[in-house]
Amino acid sequence: MTSRTILTIVLAAGEGTRMRATLPKVLHAVAGRSLLAHVLGAAPQGAGTSLAVVVGPNHQAVADEALRVRSDAAIFTQSERLGTAHAVLAAKAAIAQGFDDLLIAFGDTPLISPETFERLRAPLRAGAALAVLGFRAADPTGYGRLVVDNNRLAAIREQADASDDERKITLCNAGVMAFDGRLALQVLERIGNANRKGEYYLTDAVTIVRELGRDAVVIETGEDEVRGINTKAQLAEAEQVMQSRLRQAALDAGVTMIAPETVFLAPDTAFGKDVTVEPYVVFGPGVSVGDGAVIHAFSHIVQATIGKNTSVGPYARLRPGTSLGDGARIGNFVETKAAILEAGVKVNHLTYVGDAHVGANANIGAGTITCNYDGFNKHKTQIGEGAFIGSNSSLVAPVKIGKGAYIGSGSVITKDVAEDALALERSQQATNEGWAKRYRDMKAAAKGKSG
Ligand code: UD1
Ligand code: CA
Image (cartoon, rainbow, N blue to C red; front, side):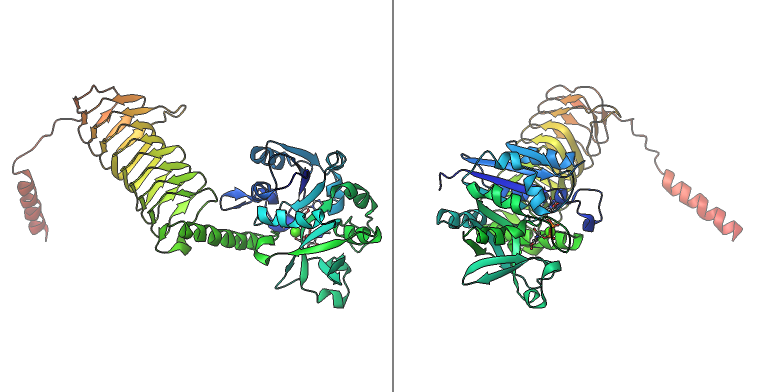
C-alpha cells in the first residue's frame, strides 16, 4: 500500500518478574504461539520493511524464537534495563540506517493486528512526526495517560509521575508508536531520565516532538487489542480474547461448533467446508481439517493433516506428523504420531500407531500397538493396503505387513508378513471339557463341610 521504508523495533528485553516464571515473559504462549511470535507475525513484512528485536542479556532463547518466526530480524541486546527509550536505542545502529517510518511495539502485547500498525503509520504520511496508539482503559491504573489538547497529543504521563487530575484520564498509551524515521534518532537521544523511576521513558518523545514544533497524534483502538501481559492472570485473559476471535472466525468460515466456547484453536487451524467440531476439542498448531470431517468430542490434535469426510474421536489424540487420508476413521482412545494413514483406513479403538505408514482401507483392530521404540531408537511399521490387523496385536518395528495380509488377534509380530498371508503368533488353545463345573462343585462341597 505504500512505498515508504519502515523499521519495526520490538522491545522484548523485560524480565517479566510479575509472571513468576523461569521462562522469559515473551516466550509464554497464547493459542499455542509465543507472545513474541504473535507480535512479530503482525508487524509489517515484505519489501521495504526491516525488523529489529531488542532482547535482554542471557535471553538467547528469546533471540532464537525471534529468528525462528522472522529470519530477517536483526537482534540487539539491551545489557541494562534502563527504560523503554533506552531499549529502543539498543537498536540505534538499525535506526541510523535511515527509514521513512520507525515503528515501535512491545513484545508483551500479542493481540495487536497488522491493520492497526498500518493505521498508525497513516498520520506520518500526512506530516505528523509521531503517532501514538491509544485506548480507553476500563481501569487506567499503571498505564501512561495521554494528555490531549486541541486534538493533538501534548504529553504522555506515566502513572508514577502523573498528578491526581492526570490520573483521572482514561485515554491510555498502548505502547505502540510510529515515528517519522528522519526525526526519530534525535528525539530518542534527547530523552532523559529525570522522573520518579529514573528510567528513560519512550513516552517522553511526545513532548520533545512538540518542542521541535512538530505534531504528535493519537490513533485509538479497543482495549482488547492492546492488553499488555504482565501476569499469569493477564495471560489467561489474553488467551480468552484470542480464542473468542478464533472461534468467531471459524464460525464465520462455516464450521459447525455445538459449543464453541469449549473448543480451543490455534491461529493457523485451517478448516474445509462442512466441518463439524464437537465440544471440548483442542487444536494445537499446524492442523488442517478437510471438507466434511467430523471431529468428535474430547479430541486433542496437533500438527496433523486430516482428510475429507474423516471421523476423528471421541477421545482421539493425533500427535505431530499425523496424516489422515480421505474417509479415514479414528475412534476412541486412539493415539497416532508420525503416522500416515491413507484413505479409508479404520482404527476404531484403543490403539497406538506411531512411526507408521498404513495403506488405504487397512483395518486396525482394537488394542493394536506399533512397538516403535526399543529404548534407543524409533523404528517404522509399514502396513499394506487392505491389510487386517486383528485386535490386541503388537507390531514390533521395524516390520512390514504386506498388502491384504491378515494378522491373527493377540499376535506379537516381529517378522515381515507377505502379501495376502495370515500371520498368527500365539500358543494353541487348550480346552478342558466340563472343567469349570467340576471346579465349582468341588469348591462348593469344601465350603459346605467347613461351614
Ligand atoms: C509502558 C509505557 C506506558 C504504557 C504501557 C502499555 C513507558 C515508559 N511506559 O509501561 O506508557 O501505557 O507500557 O502497556 O514506555 N522493556 C525493555 N527494556 C526496558 C524496559 C522495558 O525491553 O528497559 C520492554 C518490556 O520488555 C516490555 C515493554 O518494553 O515489552 C514495556 O515495558 P514495561 O515495563 O512493561 O512498561 P509498562 O510499565 O507496562
Ligand atoms: Ca507492560
